[in-house]
Amino acid sequence: MVGLMEAAKRIRGRFAWTLAVLVCALWLWAPCAGRAQSTSEAEKKKEDAGPAKTVKAEDAGQAKAVKTEDEGPAKTVKTYETTNGTQTYSRIEERERKKTADGETVTERVRMKGSDGDDRVLLEREIHTKNLPDGTIERETVLKNPDGNGGMQPIEITREKIRPEKSGSTVQREVEKPDLNGGWHTVQRESERTTGTEASKQTTKEVQQPTVNGDWKPVVRELHWDTKTPDGQTTRTVTQAPDAHGNLTDYEVHTEKTGKGPDGETREVTITRRNSGDTDAPNPVLVEHTVTQEHRTPAGDVISHTTTESDLVNGGAARNLESAHPEIVEEKNSVETKGKDGTTKTTTTVSRRGSAAPDLHPSHKIVEEKDASGHIRQVYIPSQ
Image (tube, rainbow, N blue to C red; front, side, top):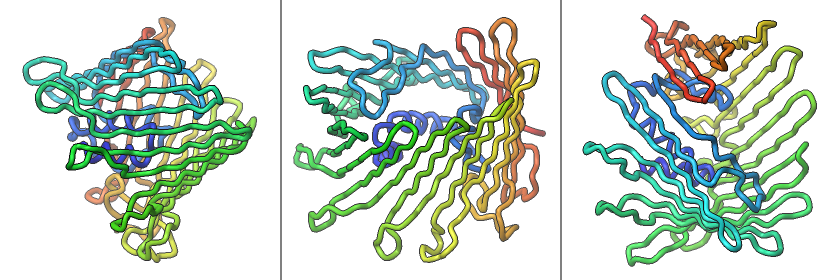
């Protein structure tokens, strides 16, 4: 599991903490994690994989690319209770922010109840930020794991410099890990440059790792475009990785479009990926093409219809051998109703296609209830 969290950190940098927490939750909840198709980021916000009760404080707020101060509250605590059959798992996320003379220090922890009932720390991350007079931001992130003796030990240090520019910003980042001699050595370097305006922005990111000869070689390159108009937003991300010949070529292309209408919006997500069976194959694999149409009724209800088609089944684990072209692998219908007392109820029915059941068939239903204070209760109902 730790390997998965570290891999997530390599690819997503600053967002690895959120990904690591999600990995922990899914690891504990394997029976409910089987999905027939990877769902788009826009849809993941509306669906959980099973019954859960969430009690959380006010969200801490996410800083932008170049921001000298964190906008979140000084301390937040989120408690999640997940019921799987007769067992209930609890997870606590803590975040504490303290101001310093030239910046701030943020400490984030993930706790889980042990067999003896104590809230032991599973992960800890310290973020030290320093704001320099010229606008440069220096940040050091220390990731810690339990040492087996009741304490926490550093397992990774990330140092980065964020320099503002007239048309954007640049980021230089280095990742260090402990070596066998008790010291630290650099295992990865990252460079990131953002140009443009809020309406049209481009970001180029490159990740380098050392070779056996000690040289540094690019292993991942990511190109991202973000365009905003009054009618909607379009984002496109191209991830390049080494092919069979060792050259950086397109591995994955992720495009997301959002359009606004008079009574709702339309979202379209398309993900294509290099054919892992033959890297020289001219045609990539369609991982996901998801279209969501959403509209509001005069009564204020929100009704959405989502279809996902793909070349893959079983959450992308296997090719769809029943067809030579993409087919619909998931269909969702949701109705969101708001009560006069501030409560919100969302009912989502899901149908899926799998390798064992090649026809689209009812899979499950999710009923989510959210009260005025923000507490969420989710019920997962499998289809008969």
